Image (cartoon, rainbow, N blue to C red):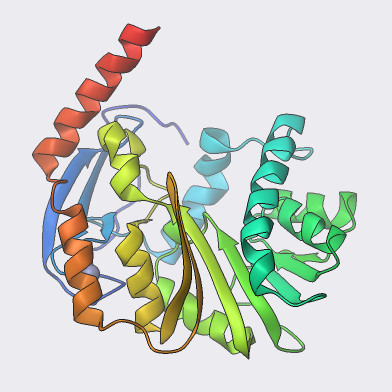
Amino acid sequence: MLNLPFTKYPITGAQVACPLCNSEDTVPLASWDRRFKRLAHVKCGDCGLIRHDYMPSEDELSEYYRTTYRSDYQRVQDGPSERHIAKRHREAALRLKRLTPHLKDGARLVDFGCGSAELVEDAIGMGYDARGFEPGSDYATYARDKKGLPVENCGWQDYSVDAPVDVVTTFHVFEHLLDPVLAVERILGWLADDGLFFIEVPDMSNALHKGFGCLHMAHTLGFSRYNLELLGAVCGLEVVEVFQDYDIGIIFRRGTPRPIEEIKADAVRQMAPWTKDVVHKTFWSYTAGKLKRR
Ligand SMILES: [Zn+2]
C-alpha cells in the first residue's frame, strides 16, 4: 500500500462516541498526521481524550496493520534489530524497578501486547512467573520460537489464563486500541482480587509539543495523565502510583477511584491549551527548530 503525503488513508472509518466517557461532543484538534497525510483528529469535549474523527473499524485496522504498519514503523522480518532489543531491555529494567516494590516474590505476571517479550524475559530472570501475548505474528514467533519464552500469538479478546494473576502490565499498547474500557474489563477477569494493573502510554500533553507530528494512523487514541486515571476509574480502579515523565504510567488496583466528574474536569483542563490552531502552529515552529539545529 503506497503511503504518499497529502493523500488520505484508504480507510473510511466512522464517527463514534468517546470510547472513554461516551460523550459525542468533540473539538477539532488537527487536519494532518506526521506523514503529512489527511487524517482529522478531534478531542473529546467532556474528557479531552484524543481520537481520529473517523475511527477505523476492527477490520480496517487489521488490514492497515497487515499491509502498511510494518513498513512504516517497525521492520522485524527475521526478528528485531540488536539496537531495538537493547532499548527494550533498558525500558523493561525501569518498568520492573517501578513495579517490584508492589509485588511479592514469584508473582504471576502477564504482559499485554508484549512485542518481542524483553519484559517477560527479564521478569523471569528476576524470579517472577511471567508470560505474555502479542497479536503481531513476527514478534510473537520470534519471542516464542527463537527465545523459547511463554508468549502466545493472539489479541486480548482471545487470551485467557488458567489461574488468577498478580499483575497485568501493558506498555504503549492502549493508544492502538478501539475500546480501552472493554480491554480493561477483560484484564480484570484475569486478575486476582488484590491484583495490580500497570499501564503506560505516550502522554499527549507532552507529545503535542511536536504539533501534529505526533499524530498517526496507528494511534487511534491519545491519552493524557487524567485520561489514563479516568480509564481506571470507569473500571472501578484506584491509583496506587503515578509515573510522570515524558510518557505517563499508572499502577492501579481495585478500590475507590476519585469521582469521575472530578477526573474529567482535570482532564479537560489539562488539554484545554491544545486547540487545532495551536497544534498546527506548533508543528511548524517545532519543524523550523529542528531544521535550524541541523
Ligand atoms: Zn470523553
